[in-house]
Amino acid sequence: MTAPLRLVLFDVDGTLVDSQGSIVSAMTASFEALSLNAPPRSETLSIVGLSLPQAISQLAPEHSLKVQERLVEGYKQAYHANRLEKGAANSPLYPGARKVIETLHSVPEILLGVATGKSQRGLDALLEAHDLERFFVTRQVADHHPSKPHPSMINTALAETGVAAENASMIGDTSFDMEMASAAGVAGIGVSWGYHHRSSLTAAVSVIDSFDLLPSVLAEIWE
Image (tube, rainbow, N blue to C red; front, side):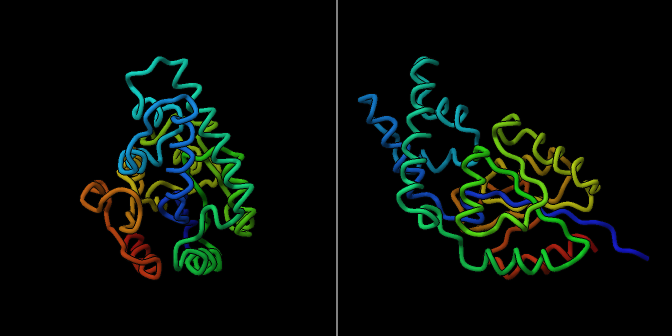
């Protein structure tokens, strides 16, 4: 019997790449450009994974929509400038990330995808910087979907690939990722090295401490 198609979706920031330095720097720059007090590092990292407008609305709820829109644009400009200056070093891959991507990609029935709060431009630039474009057959970004934890990104990825929900998994570091997976009816696998504490990943079916554990956890879930 032919094995069914499987789909493994990855979050990006805090899961595949460690972009916290660039995120915090860009957020600080966007607030300071408007002479506003920047949020503490911990608060900025707590909203990673949300679409940028929603993230800003949580960080600056006391400010008007117009100010929030200016913060969004300021963040985009600062992050883009940082990426142009540093290239791949702007968001380095976590240990084991490339190896597990290559390992899973080598299995014919496994398809890989991305579901991220990044913009299309940001994701494309990151994949190009790390030479990862060829691995992901479906790429869901903030430009085209409601913010996580809405299941739209996963639902669209399933539709694009023709994979059934029970044969898909979402890999991520935040509660938003795990709640999105649960809402879409797919298995959520949390990672312990990201920006949300392990204790917040309550919707995950499993939490891993290193990428080399992922293939065996996926095998257990699919069995």
